Image 1 (cartoon, helix red, strand yellow):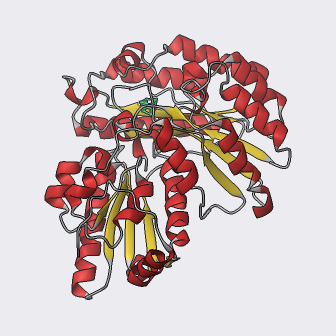
Image 2: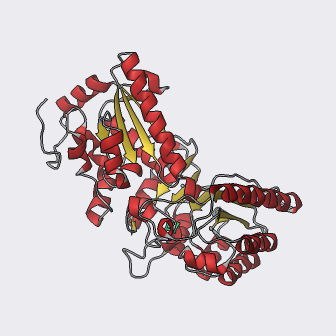
Image 3: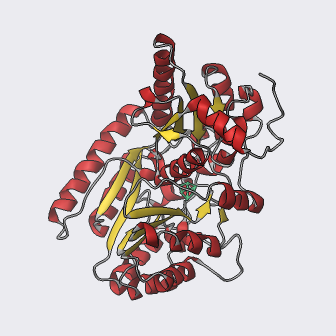
Length: 420
Ligand code: SF4
């Protein structure tokens, strides 16, 4: 098959579309991780169906299987690795006409690993160039050629490409729809790989977001979730004075048919009084606020490069509870961060007893490549991490039992387990 330069963006003609549909016929996407990834999979499904592909119920039936990967924890990547080998083994032993693709976070930081350990993969796109997949399909580009097309961030031009090429989505979530309002993150917490996978933060223009929401009405969608790594820093990268509180207010006003407007995830210090006021003022805006504390000891928060202290976080909790009496507060928590002592850990438990969250996602710290925390001394042994995680979960369960409002609980930290 002749190889072309994949950087030359080709227009997909009708003939090519038919050829691709004939080539692959059925697709299946296996999604790991957070809601951002799930939303990306919906967009990828829309892009493929636009080319004439049909979804298959199982991956065994598909001619094109894509794994939308998560890198937030080592365990999530090992699962992807195992799944890819299983798929490869299946297609060999069943002589199955099946091509394999990797998308999502893993290609953004693990190119050498993909070249060396996954040479049988046919397609690779990252979070910032997933709309390139149609240019790769059926063209026989090498993995190296495709990996060269990865982008470390989305520029404004890329966001426009996103609006045009990835506009169609196959919504998997019925009456609820996820809406990405920004990409990337500028906070660069020392434990987190997201800034290295999704790049620096850029917001979508509000008009594009409103257009996407408006189109949901005729599809009987009644709930939306506005998605971003830090939704409440929305607008900072593209507008002088239009912020998340403005977006939320305008969404609630423009679309009164929306029964619930949810959002994920909020960075504690960006929860402003104005935002709290907007949440309190509109009945269709959620009263569940997920804003990750991550730890309850100031020295660990500092080492994590979180931009708040426990006292500042506590103040946000008070402001939220004062203004929104029925607010439900959720958090993410990490145990076993480098340097965490028994005393730091007990400080965290004490803060949790005081704040009494309604829900929490917990995880043991997992060192990630490129991050500052992975290079810190005094890494906590796995056995201690596991024990502390167990104790933390028991502590939270005891709190939930005495909470009045029937909270729910999960052991998976969405920020860490993108599997957010
Ligand atoms: S933990 Fe959240 S705020 Fe911190 S760098 Fe990762 S995505 Fe950004």
